Each structure stands twice: as structure tokens, then as C-alpha cells.
Image 1 (spheres, rainbow over the protein chains, first blue to last red):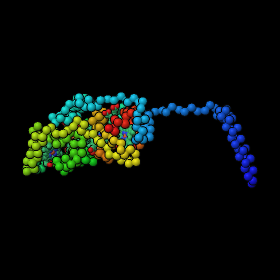
Image 2 (cartoon, chains in turn green, yellow):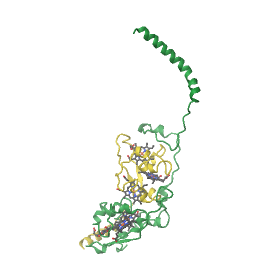
Image 3 (cartoon, each protein chain N blue to C red):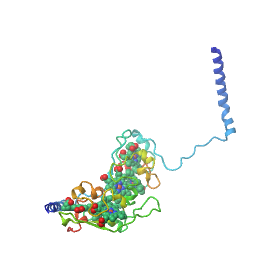
Image 4 (cartoon, rainbow over the protein chains, first blue to last red):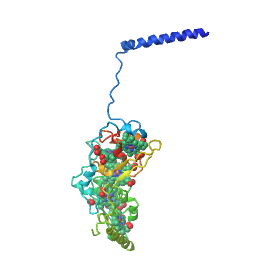
Length: 193
Length: 108
């Protein structure tokens, strides 16, 4: 095919595009109805893609969300003899009301009032009373049984060394619950305060 | 009996020491970064147990949302945006969502 043919064809195409470009929108509206408006973004706010060096521009003109002073609420809770928060008392005196689930209809897990007495063989003075009640008020059986403890008194070889190393009671006591180094008599109930 | 004596000595020592370092914020968990590509120099997220245990029983989170072991879950902003981990609640309905005005509440 000749070069001339392509020139004519290109010209014709340009012309068609020009005419089409000028007429198509009204034509399209006639066929499809008015153009769609962008919908408002429904639901929650979205986080734009994180870019470390644009922080000045990201935070401008934004009102911070209302902030509860959780620290002041914590300071209002009772303390133990060792100086930490007494979470057991706070719960039993209804100073905190932790919910049992995200659903408003969620129900509490069963509370079990069973004390397990553990007596170390070589140190009977250091008898331990493990109370199920304060634990099952906030924890479910699966949190401990049988991942951490057997369901049988004396079945686990618990020692203080292991507790301080973060095993058995030390899984929680230390990182989250009261520190074992600070309050021997809370577990060793036969010890003087 | 020898061991008991040893522990008694320890106990005396413990009572002599100033009230053991039980800070009021006991239970704060500082995350270690699991993803490397993005924002390596951004401050790590801190999870305050005390704020949450005032409002929820432990079994709301353990083990349904989080394992009871620091660093056991691979938490990232992507997962949070998709409603996993912290995003189960931090989605602007149960608690504040991850918007640009709230970054510093988790990343101190």
C-alpha cells in the first residue's frame, strides 16, 4: 500500500476523532443518562499510604479525636501493699467493669471458686494457695488449661526459679499481673505479711 | 530446708530494698517491627495493657485476637487496616481508628 493511502487514512481518523470528541458527550448522555457523580466515601476514615517525609503536610488542619485520660483513671484505682495497682480489689469493688466481649450480648465465662493448695516437698513453710476465683473472673479455662497447667493439683513441677524465668505463674505474674518478687505472701499464704 | 533458708534470706533482702519497681504501667508491651520495607525509622507501637484491662476481660483478646506472648503475632499496619489484631477494635467504631491524627497515640 502506498504512503498516500496511510496519509488519507490518518487524516480521516483525526477528523473522526475531532467530530466524535465534540459530539460524543451529549450523544452519550442522551443514551446513558446524566454522567455519574462520585459517591461520598462511606464508612470509616482511611489511612493514606504512609510516607515518612511528608508528615508536616499530613497532620495539617486535623482535629485530634477526643482523648480519655486513662492514666488518671489508673491512678484512681486502689494500690496493693507493694505499690502496684490492686486489680482484684478494683474489680470486686466495681471500680472497673471489664466487658466479657465485643458484642453487647456477650456473656461472662463461668467463675470457679476453687483453691488449689500446693506444698513444696522440701519447703512446707512455703505452701501456696492458688485461688481460681480471681483468675476465672477475667480469664477463661483455656488460657491456662492445658497450655500452662495440667488440670490436676501438684501435676506441674513449679519452682520459684521457673516463675522468675517467665514459666507457669510467671507467664502472667511479672509481665502483666503483680510481680512475684514484690509480694511473696499473696501466693504463699502461710508467710507473714 | 537449706533452700527455704536461702529464700528467707532473699525475702529479707527484698523487704530491705525500696518498694520493688512495680510501675503503674506494668504490662506495657513495646512492639518490635516485623515488616522491614516501610518506615523502619518510625517509632514502635506501644500496647498499654492497663488501658485495655480496665475495659475488657483478658479472654476478649487472649487467645482469640492475640497470643499471650510478646512478639508472637505479626502485627503490621496492613493487618490493622484489614481489621485484624488491633484493627478488630481500632476501626473508628469500638475505639479510635488509625487515622493521621491518632498515630502518636500508639506510636509514641
